[in-house]
Amino acid sequence: MVPLGHYLFLSAVLFAVGTVGVFLRRNVITVLLSIEVMLNAVNLAFIAFGRFQGSVHGQVIMFFVVTVAAAEAAVGLALAIALFRHRESLNPDAFTSLKW
Amino acid sequence: MLLFLLAAAVAVAASLAVVLGHNPMHSVLLLIVSFAALAALYIGLDAPFAAVVQIIIYAGAIMVLFLFVVMLLNAHREDEGAGGAALGGRPLAAGAALAIVLAAELAWAVLRTRRAGGSWMGAGPESDGAALQSVRTLGGVLYSEYSLAFEVTSLLIIVAMVGAVVLARRES
Amino acid sequence: MIPLYVAQIGVVVAVFVMLLLAAAVMVYSERKVAGAIQQRYGPYLVGPKGALQPFADVIKLILKEPLRPVAADRVLYYVAPLLSATAAFAAFAVVPFGAETTLFGLIEEPIRLQVADVNVAVLVIFAITSISVYGIVLAGWSSNSKYSLLGALRSASQMISYELSYGVSLASVLIIAGSLSLTEIVDAQQGAWLGVLPRWNVFVQPVGFLVFMIAGVAETNRAPFDLPEAEQELVAGYHTEYSSTPFMMFFLAEYINMVTAAAVAANLFLGGWHGPFLPESLGWIWFLAKTGAILFFYIWMRWTLPRLRYDQLMQFGWKVLLPVAALNLILTAAGVITVGR
Image 1 (tube, rainbow over the protein chains, first blue to last red):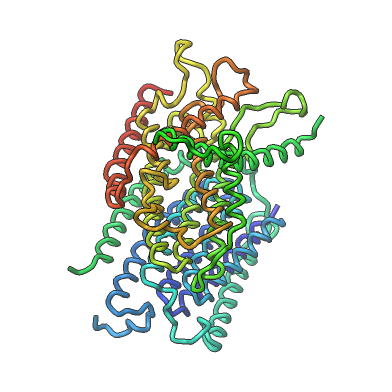
Image 2 (image 1 turned 60 degrees about the vertical axis):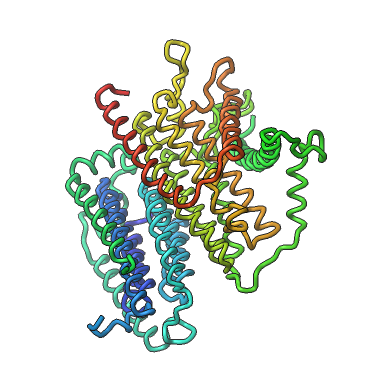
């Protein structure tokens, strides 16, 4: 049986990888993808804890996380489209001035 | 154990490739591979329903949305302003340092936490997973204890739908 | 006595070969039935009554020259047909096609005629259908050509729109059956009411069956919903730039998707392998008959009905089919709560 710590360590590594992507990438779509990586890491932690406690609450919370991630991806991508239409660029550095 | 190592390796490799890749189209597809690896891990954790839901919603719907946007905006041709690779020398080193520090801190927290009966590294599950597999149990808990969250989530989805349509509409 | 794992490997091999042969039979019967509807002979030269025509087609396709446009994405161009074909075969892995059988006493204990007995089988089929969208989208995008991209985007949005009605009509069957496992759903349809009318779900859920069939036709990109690959509008849609073996894989994937959709419909609504006159161990004959009937209906629809325009198709899916399926679900749930199963 794989101990819980292994799953938590994997979740930590994935979370760190996603965080690096959010901070460093200069492309809005890749930033959104990195956020999804982070959310996946959190899902793994929830399901692992649920399994090791013997309750279904981990899976239930995972469903809510997935649903919120779907809503957030939809709105984030719509924002990316709107930004691209205005400035023809997907680089967040092109939007640093407050003037639209 | 072998299944866990294999799926974990695939998940980490695919996530790294997503974050470091220079072509957003390939990043989206590698993220789907990462989701599939995580679904395999969920099946190993006695959560087959969660695994299938992950594939249907995340890999089947959300990533299709990402693909559409990448194709619509021709994002695969966007250059980052840094030539070939997406992350150059200095940012890559800083990013690697950040990731290592974060992962080490989380792992340290896990190792230090005391559970009743020892640390988490040697823990086995408290009960066998047969009850968890029942979708009936899942539905029962979802609609009784979490019914408020359920209704609020449906409201959230409607708001997100309306918001996405309004934001992406052309000004005419 | 054959050991159990050998029998299970035998089932896997048998399913694979059966699917390939089913695709060949579908190609042949499509052309013959089309000929009958259009009052002409179908293929009749190759083999007796043209029965070897699909094999001749396969040989022709394999011997053609495989082309790749220079600007096409090198990896994705070949991954897309593989993904389509793999998803098509994988979806059939959880479809049961017969009762528990010991193959006339050859094996020690009865095995199911199913590659994998998962207790969330219905959802697995749904998940793999979602993955097959990617084969089409990647094919269209990686070909780097206008027609392909347009066809792929249309096809993908059509498939994800009709997946909703597919899922909701499936949910109404699940409410009645009370289980996600396909074997249990089929076993709940045993017997007959009053000894005459078989206890099939189609009589309890006629609207659900109709919605499921329409959504299934749209999901497999068949007429009258085949605008994404229509010859008259889009050259050939997402497989314009493909030739030889990759093209054959798309073709194969489409027919096997049809077979899977028909098999799932037969299991969910028409009682699977239960039927009168035959013993349980020969129930797969009934399964084949029911699946064949649904597939004949698919072919009939293709050569009879005109094609729907893309915006008509999307409006129909969202404004008509989805509300009907949702209403059906609500009424079914209300019925089950008040009356019981």
